[in-house]
Amino acid sequence: MADPPDAMIETERLILRRWREADVEPYVAMMADPQVADTLGGVLDRAQVGRSIARNEAAFEQQGIGRFAVERRGDGRFLGHCGLMPIHESLPPAPGFEIGWALAKDAWGAGYASEAARAAIADAFARAELAEVIAYTTVGNLRSQAVMARVGLARTPARDFDHPLFEAGHPLCRHLMFVANRP
Image (cartoon, rainbow, N blue to C red):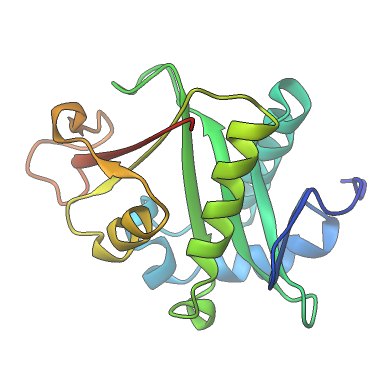
């Protein structure tokens, strides 16, 4: 992977940017952590991480929007990812764009997810001119639900859905919807 242009979004403490070769190893380590990957469908191996990064970069190339690598400004450390992706056509909320994030466990609790998500949502409304940004998560993912509320996504129970990859009753089956509309 060639290193693409630098930062696309900067916040007080973070840089949300395109992916670099140097991000692969810390991303592999992050996605191998069961606590990080628990609500994301499970741990990812190196090949799966490579496919994930490739999907993110393809979204940027094709639609100008994707999941950014998140870097801490103070020391340049890779913290995780945050941004929007097109919703897969097999999911009930499609078509549209979903905001999502994941951070290394030692970056939890510092407000980085909220800071990154606010910036990505603002970018989606301003630069990409999206009318709506959605987020969804499992019933048990209270941490993400709290971030969704903090960044201004409104709980929308009428749009909740069962994820088709999980059997009814599986803890990751039922997904709760949150929506933000363009100001």
